Image (cartoon, rainbow, N blue to C red; front, side, top):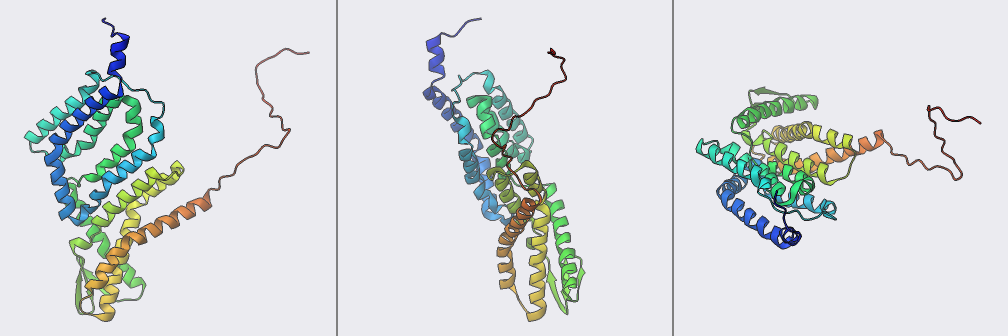
Amino acid sequence: MHAVPAKEAEALESPIVLGIVGGLTAAVLVWSYWPSLGVLVDRWRGDDNYGHGWFVIPITLAILWQRRGRLEGMKPRRPSLLGFAPLVALLALRYLLYERNELWIESALFPVVVAAFTLAVGGWSTLGWAWPGIVFLFFMLPLPPSLNPILAGQLQTVATYGSVNLLHAIGLAVINEGNVILVGDQRLEVAEACRGLSMLLSFATLITAMVILVRRPIWERIVLMLSIIPIALVCNIIRIAVTAFCYAKFGGEVKAVHDWAGLAMMPLALGFVLVEMKIMSWLVVEVDVVEPRGFIRATYSNQPGPRN
């Protein structure tokens, strides 16, 4: 096997060479994904359900910046053709998906391609530093076309029945016909815009960012992640119930109430999260154990030893 001379190896591992290789590869990937990224931006701009996509890249950069300490002492690695093999394979797969018109899967490969690029240029240690931010990039993507209508319909039904039950609990006589709430002789439709999909996706993005950025015990992070759907549903039910209540008391159009209630959903959800975190802090109290001076810790062993 031919050995690489020491001076040549040092040149290949220099930051300048790594910067050139990484920069050229990144430029090719951006050029390749530019049309797909344009479609994503149009979705963020035109669909309220995915408006949170604008914040994904800034939050990803914040995650990487918070983890920058892991890069200290990391030695530069020499670029190798073998390291680029997964990246080339993913790009070939992307081409096949594009030819088969599997556009969602082709777009969903973007975070995986970023991971392969990180592995190729920086190695496993760099990928270990960047992987939480790379995983967070999945929030850029829309839901699969087959899942979107199913999830949206379920959310709309839950929002309608939940708000009707809440209105019954506060003494307001209402009934529902499908996704329409009958308030007296007036009809309040729980439209698609009120189904809570936008709230759910935005709230999931925010809580996931908190779980990654805020240092909390693992069990608390798991509880926070599991509470995303219940809190989002409760907030949306409260929004619809408040709108229906004002509709019953004041009659006529209550568009202003509907819009203000929509704006209040995210602060309300964050309030639930703060209460949840406070309750978890009461359940588990961390105690620092300090050993008194002069205390000698005894160690025991079941191994036979010499006797005096």
